[in-house]
Image (tube, rainbow, N blue to C red):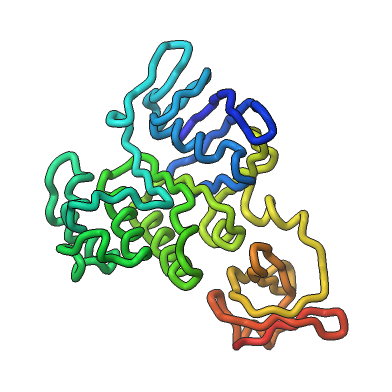
Length: 289
């Protein structure tokens, strides 16, 4: 469990503002920090990792104090069990894939390195250097390396934003798989609502250093979504039954829409299906592609 209450003055594009965040995150939860650039999301990750120091407050992880301004406690990054994955991968260019993974371990465990190489589909590339890999492959290496640290917190700072949509979709699935398989406590920074909805247990909406809204993705996003005429192709993100009707959440660009499905739709549609959503007599219809 993460218990955090921190304050820090930041320099924003519109002048200084105060980052003031309080939350408790249960173990094995995936929390996404969502908000405009410059609102303090990455700074919050850096504070957790020990790369930035709050002006005041405390950070406690699984009962251990990592930072407490009143007690003059500030553990170094090396003493915090954190796995950190950046947008730019931050791999060692002169090390092979296998060597990058080994570097993350406090004690050598070749079996676990082999397991992560297999799980991430990198076994055949283990002797390659990062410069010879695609962006998606490099991000897999960065993710595997972070997991090999056996972190108490996995921090993901927009790790997929530089990748094409197809690669992003695949790696989103892998992040979710690893989060559950290794029972990680994960904090993700993302600007992609579809990604947030797909991955998150909870979402914290941050605006100029303050959490203005938090809850499940549905609670955070759907009170602002209204019905409009539309026609677009996208993917079904979830299906749920409410009383006697079924509701599907479908991505629409960087937005989300919730559509009522008919009984016949339920027989043919499932999560992950590519669909066409169109308007007919002012009611949306969903057609599998």
